[in-house]
Image (cartoon, rainbow, N blue to C red; front, side, top):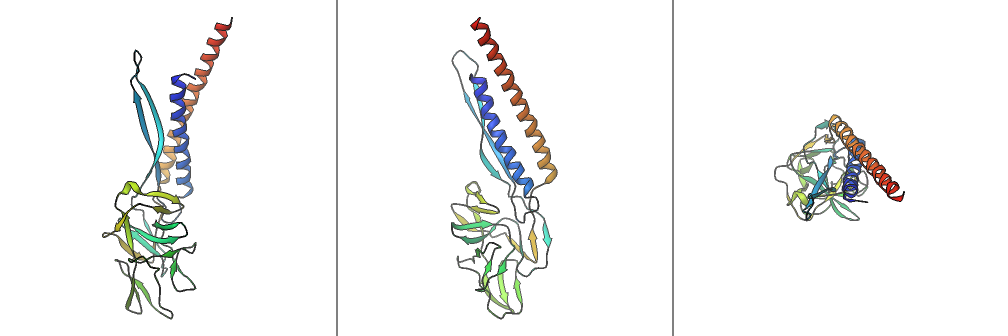
Length: 236
């Protein structure tokens, strides 16, 4: 295959990857705390002697949209919505993970956990525990958890030192190399943050990507027919 074919194939591969990301975004429109993702394209340009320069585009990186989503009122004691920058930190078998999904429950051991059973961590990196028999639980905007009017824990709110180090792991969980306290983050008890996916924008982007992919496929088909015609002509 000649240069135009290789160039188009790299672009097609990136467009296919972007279509998969968009489909995942749409599938998570209603997922609490989900962060929209996008594909970042990079361009490689090489100057060829005696010929026009070669440009190849690759969709080889993902961008995580950290934009604020709306908050939905649930009234749940352990439903915690985040406003501003920052994440909750949870302990998983694969290491600590960041999340904006604040739907927590009380485990049998008296600690706050995610629906998957992963412990919510406090500012010191220990599981957030609720005293047994507490009748009234409140969580302040700064993450202070109080039981019957007495402060018993400080929920940790964190953000990556370098936002580009944030890596999507699975579902609504992320990892980052270095963390620092999220000073401006605010917790709203009794609320959950929605997904920040905008359905109309995602569908419009899907249509654009699909049309671009179809154009690339038509070019590849035309290039294939051209090469076949050349081979048939030379073979006569």
